[in-house]
Length: 281
Image (spheres, rainbow, N blue to C red):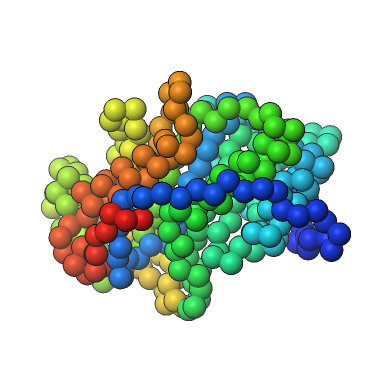
């Protein structure tokens, strides 16, 4: 079912809504050769939003200077921190939409209970490089504020924040990937001596932050070249406590993910991917 198409801004449309400028100093890992494929930040609402064409158009109008296109979603994500519930579709209700056409390649998916700002590395040469966390954070928060404005200033509270990274590690010798690229803490003893690893995944909670990593066989395309190797996914999420702000919680997750990633990868990986650590993000 096609519900949304490319929409150009009308010449007589009002100016974009006021933006809350976000900036700050964050832990930042700089690699010259990191095989990063995706970065995403998410917020979960306590209750579902009910989208109408009028609401979607108002959100789009607020963000038209940044996102030049409005598209239908190709898929829907599981909502972090909430039991799985079916997407609500009915007369006058829409399941969600995607804001696209941003100069850095950022896309924002808006679902009834979830907003996701994401950068995905495109397969062709010359595609936009990862624009770093601050712009990803800005895109997410601009969309939250535009959504709030579209509902007259009242939306359900945000109860969960989440951030994830995905890297694609090329593997000429798959049986050596764990020893070559991952620190001992990422290894699973039961796989010692395995001739091939298909997937390793673990998840746990430490001081209110949920962590997860997954290492699994995968294929992808980077700069037009097909890569056969392993996909590394690292995730951190937290449920907001009373008095905590969404952006502070997200910033904390971002910094924890940097430390988490460094702990997972080996010295060999840091050398091959040309790590240059800098705490000024």
